[in-house]
Every structure is written in structure tokens, then in C-alpha cells.
Length: 466
Image 1: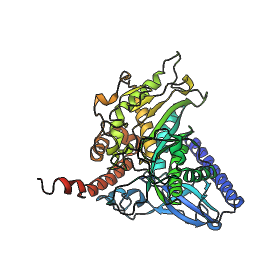
Image 2: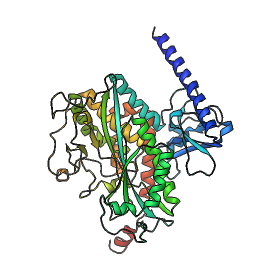
Image 3: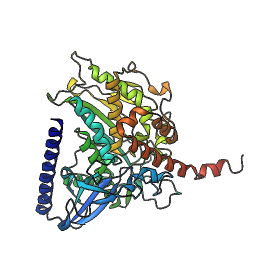
Image 4: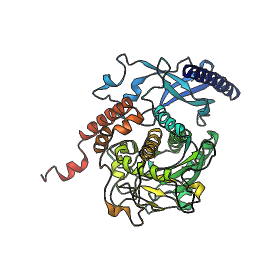
């Protein structure tokens, strides 16, 4: 009986794939597409892939990539144990387009489409190193509970002057007035309007790509902005953050400046985050399972979920802070969190529970930087919450004062974060042993490469004084 159900499920998936391929080809034809960008999000969350003539686009033409793209550092190097992370032949993965992700490339001169692809092994299994598959693996756990996670990301970034020499610090660009910002402009409408030409293009591109950009605000840093996305299922939100970053960089370049999602790009400016609002709904009823039966109370499941975040976020920090620069943002005295305290509408806490109606009960995780891979950051936070539900953990009492006074409860560096992840068998089991091993190896190599660099601070203060 189980075998028959498995065969029926596989047949259903094959039928869905055939229908999806047919609708995708029809979409390309209706839009008169000439080229297709086949995109795969890599470990950093950037796009890898191929560009294929639309007339030759199919599931079987050109959609192959070596699995080594998931074992490559941000500098283009390979970990020392590279041969242990991929197959001995460094074989190709099979790429399959997700028809739901097809969109126009609005800045292209010829009609061009972009489609996010999923990665599979040659025998048809989801490839364990692909970030989209890691997120899908975690989501399957919630499917077993009859629960659908709901996510709403908030993404911060800076606009900066073009910087072609990495030895020079970044600086804010001039706006319409011809002058760069020099004072804090939190929530300033006029400060946003300084960059109207760029943001007009951004909104036009977002509309053409059907990105669910909800609101735009000016953050506290000079030329620092934040976009909020409408809440929806986790995969679509990760896809939209992935596509938005690419879009925003293109908009800025067309106006002679950069858009950067570096977590801490400037010494005297605040860092950039990717806050993740998260809630859960019952698949059958559509009701928010975080809401309690009594006014002002939360469900037991919500408290277990919150307890899981408090316990496991420190071990998952390598996904929220994936780069050496990430930990410059998480500093005492900054607006970024330094511990796992939680509170109601308390922005000093790493876990903020907004004051809202019961049906909108949610928790805002404030740990991830804007440099985080959205697929892995969302997968990690959902994995932490799921472990809390499984272990029936309970959170601490909500904090009413400043969480900064509690002190550090998070790793202080990428190396420390990787050690915590390496020692966490629970997260390894949920995210996949092979993937976690590859991720740690890639990030450890990046840290070692960074550690070899002698900084200007060392030359300035240590050269003649030690």
C-alpha cells in the first residue's frame, strides 16, 4: 500500500512538472522572450546560472551546473576539504525551473526572462547543498504538523558613492540637492525624496517583476533605506528578497552609485539588518496558531516556538551573520541585538513581539543582517522554532527594560558562530549533515582568508607602538 502511495505521489509530481513546463513555455512565447536567465541562488544568496536563447529553453537544454558552486567561497576559493564536499568527479547537477518564479528582466534591452531553478542529482533527488532545498527540507517538518509558516522580511541597505578602490572608506552619495547626508534622518520623507529618481526605477522594476514591496522608509544611517515585503509563504519571501537585491543593485548602478547589503559598511553608521516577522497558520482552518484562546494570551505552541528561538539562535548565528563583517553590526550600544531576550514591542531585544490583534500574533527575529542568504536565514529561524515545539521549550519572562543591559549572549565573531553550529547536532539533523559540513567548510575558509589580511588599524596603532 505504501509503495502504491509513493508511486502515485511520484506520478502526480511528474504530471505537475509537465503542466508547469507547458505553462512556462507558453508564458515565454506570449511575452516574446528572446533570452532566459536560468538563476540558482548560491551559498551567499547571489545568482549563479546560465543565459539561454528562449527558442532552446527547456528542462533538458543547458540546465546543468557543477555542484562545486555550493562549495565556493565569496573570494572564489575552495575549502581545503573541497574533495570531501562534492563528488570526486565534481559532476553536474540537473536544474529544473520553478515556473512560479518566472519574471521579466525589466532592465534588459531585449525581452528577457529570469527563472529561479531548483537543483537535483542525476537520479532525481533534491541536491543537499542547494539553499532552496535546505529551506524546503525545513518546511516539510511543518507540513507534518499541518502548519504553514508565514514570513514577512524587512530589508535594510545603504546607497553609497561608487568605490573602485577598496582601501578607501565608503561614503554616502549626493542626492537631488547635490549634497550627501550628514545628520540622522530616521523616517524622513524629504531624505527619501533625495533619491526619487533611483527609487522610481526601483518601484517600476519591482512592479514589472511582481515583487510584493510593501513600504519604504528612510532608516537612521546616511542614505540608509528599508523595504518591507508583504507577508506570505517562506519560499516566495526568500525568492523575493533574492530578486530584490539584484534589482536594487541594478537600479543604483544605472544612476552612478552602489546599493550595498553589507551588514556594516561604514564605521560611524549603523548596520543593516533583515528582520524576519514570522507566524504560523493552521492549514485546514487558516487561523493563526500563535494566538491564544484568551485575550492577551498566546498559545502554548507560540511559547514553545519562542523558547526554541531563544535556545538555538546562538548556534544558528552563522546563518544570520554569515560573513566576517556581520559581527561588526552586533555591537554593544548599537540598535542591533546582542542577546536572545524577548519583549513586547521592545526593539532592544533580539526577539520582539509586536503589539497587534490576536490574528496577527507574530514574533520579529532581529538577528539576521542584510548580508544573510534569505533562504538559509529563514530556514534557520524556522528550524530553531521547530526544535522548540518538538522539545516543548519555554521562553524566559518578557523583558521590559533595555536588553543591552543583559550583555552578550550571541557569538562575537564568525569563527565563534561556526564553532557553535559545528557542535549543534539538532540543527545539523534538520538542515542536513552534508550541507552543514559544506557550509562550515566554506565559511571557515573565508574567515581564515580574512584573518591573513593586515588592516590599516594595525599599521596605524601597532607598527611603532608595540
